[in-house]
Image (cartoon, rainbow, N blue to C red; front, side):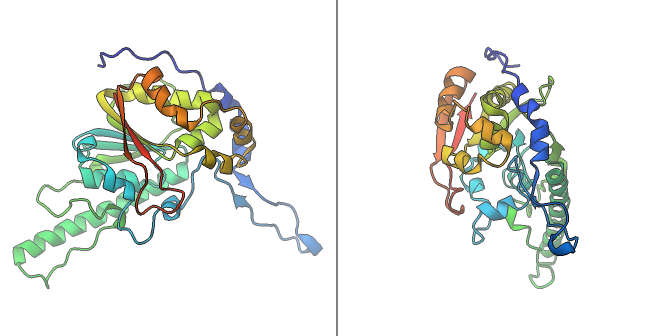
Length: 303
């Protein structure tokens, strides 16, 4: 149990909860009704991702010429190896799986508000786990035969290409990684879960736009409570300019954007002075290999 005094109760996310119906209505935008000229054709509706729950998010932000998510290159092994970890806003789960494969997490849970993305994440986990096992079996066959031509290990998915899968201490990703559909801000029930490392990458803007200042404070307080003493919180906050570009994604986002007082440049002060983290380090100001607009600073807070 933590010996540090816990912060005061987080403000409720009631404001965000009130807007839930509006957000659901805003998930789809576009025409309905009959087509012009009596043809009766309906316009195809355009999906709007009010939570930032993009279907091809990794393709948007990662340069095709790199072999893995550039964020994995700057993370330290000691933050993850033999640790219980949580990935908030895991999307399709590729970073979650990559962390497990590369750094040998003891366990890692990925949560996301979008059930469709969680379904895709579980599919990715099964796919990569199968590739993992095939690669290990082929490597063992190659080592026993001593012939390069008889058995060449199948290349593992590029997202986890640095995962160490070819040695004798095989790391079973399928047993280490799990995914769960969860609205992290609104799930305020008491949890006995505790983590050594919590990752929150490019998620804060979407929580802020959908649940306002109350939502961002709730996020920070809940992360503090779920971290074990000495735990690590890794955050990749989006800049205020990014908020401005996405403020019209829904009526709720537009309303919250106009009332937000806690801008991203205040997060560090709040996490250190109000929430109670003892120190912070900026591990990078610019990501090499990220598409322009996604080369964001990454901050690591220590409990």
